[in-house]
Image (tube, rainbow, N blue to C red; front, top):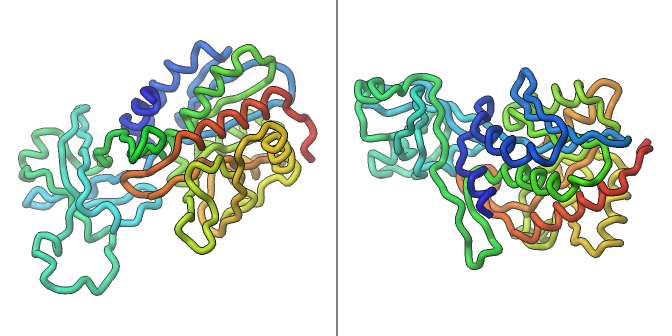
Length: 340
């Protein structure tokens, strides 16, 4: 898990994925024939081969915070990047990334917290309520290179919960998907198929990266690799940690390709790979923007179940990561051409 730990530790808030991209490029370059970075920042690793032309996509970016302004007391007011609930990041340790390439330790707080919560909180926490406290004054922060537009990320390392099978850490959405594609590329080095491993930008802020890359590549079919909320504490539970990767049949914006889904289900059954099915009314992934590119692309989603989705610390299971890699490996060794 050393590679996953490096990916998780890297700063890669939407629109600022450079650190993550550098790690991925160094890991994958020996296993593909061509690598390039497009104008928006997507890393596209191409393995030449026979049709069909397949695009596998995993986004590099993570949710985060941008400094909106700094008051006279040195408190930083915030703008959130990505779909994070303001209430879940209160009290979290964070790193403020300066324009000079350094980082400063801070804590997320609110005015009410500093006043002692003497009055009941009658309204939901809003982004406007959030403050980041570094213990430094306005003048000291400016001297260190902190200004409007600087980025702030949760300060959490990769850890294990209960056993070495359950992993927790920041940015597992979707560094774990990037990890899957890197490991897959290493396993498929000798396979003669035409595969694009695309590590996309700005998924958390509009699905922009996958839209641009799919337009250029024109894949014959595609799979987005992402994470999904487990829902295992609902009644009845929808998906569970450690029970295999999830095949998404529908989310808020996408009805995934029926023929591709049936093929994946057959591969999972024939090879005894655990697979969970997902139908959701919320959320979306890169598959949406890929599917509606140009004349349309048959697309689906494989997602690793995750607890604490869209928070500072996510939780995933090693078995689900392994089952995702195994399923994709079988899928790519004998890829179908016609999925219409």
